[in-house]
Length: 603
Image (cartoon, rainbow, N blue to C red; front, side, top):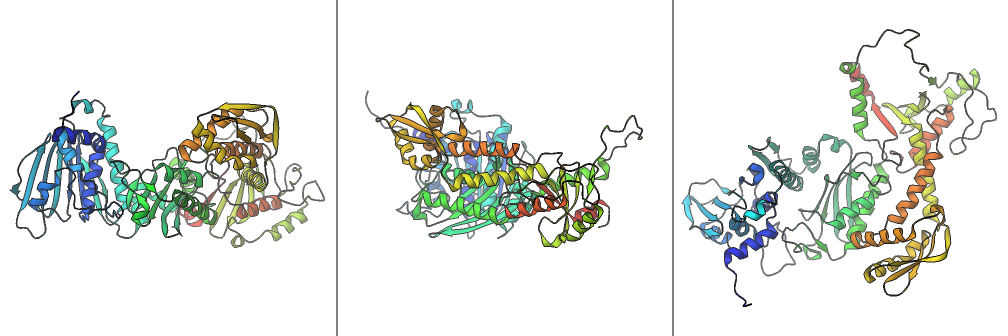
């Protein structure tokens, strides 16, 4: 078969298949062009999920008629010289506009600040009309109609209008977070208007606009530097988490990216505080020399490659964990908000009058600090308080002494115990409010942290297999596993090479008992291939530790002495990660005095 030169239109349509995957891709390219042009106000209008209409209007620098004519040709750009090692703009490939024009009806109207009139150009299915004079405001208006009309097969792969509109909204949100000094407005017949006013240098205010005001209240500031690589942003407290990763935003030199290395680093940073089925909320910005990052990896420019990926990963994990250790133990404000809603007067429903027949079979238990328990409490547990010489109920004199010895609320972040409700919830008074602690969840976390510390402070006991398990794998997988063999050995998993394409498992962690060693090794190989980390074994060990902690903790319904409850609070204050249990639920809820006063209409 003879080789022939493809037509320019077909070349552009092939390029469009990589650059313009869906309406959201076109929106991303056009918004990036507006930002590169110095726009401070960008308006996006859509119809039919962006398939019928996509219009982006900006107040940027605009283009001259000569520039406009070149802008719709492939590989024509003003953002790149002769090197790919110093890219400081969002766009640089010179493919977006010609790619869009090859599969849609494209028109561009523009005017520079000093020009007396504007100019317009139209491209329909790859055919370009001459540039014509046109009235225009300073800036550029790019209008895309009937996207993919020239490639009908692509239309069959589009999702519903609602899904495509939602994808464009997500693009706008990401751009809005990255550029808080720019005003974004998204409108159209297929959506309600979404507006993000400019917030200047206040990045957290913009994040609150996009992610909600709860993020502002539950965010921890990140600011770290390592070897001239800077990391800034905000990360949510562990109890402020989501069921998916859609609220994880990462930017590299201002460019929104969705890179597996960066997302896996965030996951690893929270691995000890959030269950694997939940996802943290984080907005991170990485700033580094453009020569140290390659953004020319994919036409969509959503993936990047770092010269030293280990440095970037370590910086993210270390900075987030340091921030969580510093401030991450506080409870999410969403718990207090739910408590406030539960106490609102409108939520009250009249109950039936009390009678012996309708009363609950078990009355509410309310143990006060200086009151006497109605039945003999269980013995103190050594982890939190010294064993008492007497096992009976405290006398009135002892209770009075305990009340006098109770520390003043301002002395401790979680305050001093005032009551135990329903033999499960500890109520403590703080300097400016009160704290309600789930005693089982709190103690479960403390036991788990103690077990995990022991787990990582010394090698895990291993059990030798009578007959080694042989796992057949690809040679690359074997190489990756053997590179982490020392790490696995410390966790009780002893492996060695068994020929070019097999791994022999000689020992497994004793605490896991009888297990599927072959399945575990295959899982570790898959993790290493995808994420370059193997946390499966650690996760299994920690899961077992969490299960043991759950069964070995103070149970719900356990009556506790005042000194035991105060000791539990003090231990929580000294233990990182105690703000949430092993399952990601909060261990305590804090209610400020101002909130309580508002409930009673006093403020």
